[in-house]
Length: 167
Image 1 (cartoon, rainbow, N blue to C red):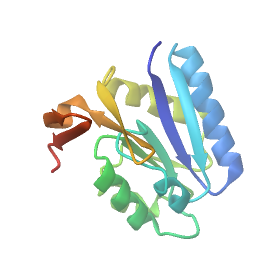
Image 2: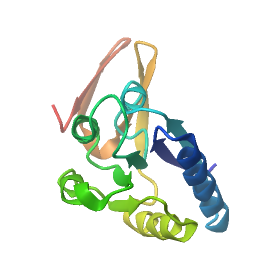
Image 3: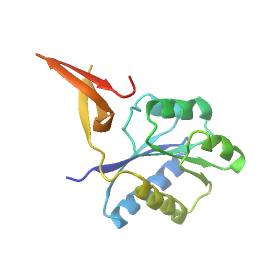
């Protein structure tokens, strides 16, 4: 089975969550790729579940209540520097700040399906075809680990110690 393109949508407005989700699904059908979208209504809700390599693309609204955009973007980058971060906003005012977090793109609301589709096409060109990874289960949590990030692995009976490039 082919890998799914996992996309997170972080927006406190359900209409935008649904609109981007629908555009992503249609994009998957048109481009013959499996697309899996997961929506979050706050940065906190997203960060509570986010781990490295869990999403290839993250659409994130800049104006939301709760945790500020700088904290959310910083934590995303601390956990995963390879995912593509696409900011959504009603104002271009924070564009320079958004790109300081290595944003892939900046989309202003209201947006068109053509605009989001164009960004997704560009993203597909940039994303690796099929990253190879291991899924490690620890403390009832599944953690994807890219093979490129593994420096060494040592096993002893039922124990496994993996050293990563980030250690």
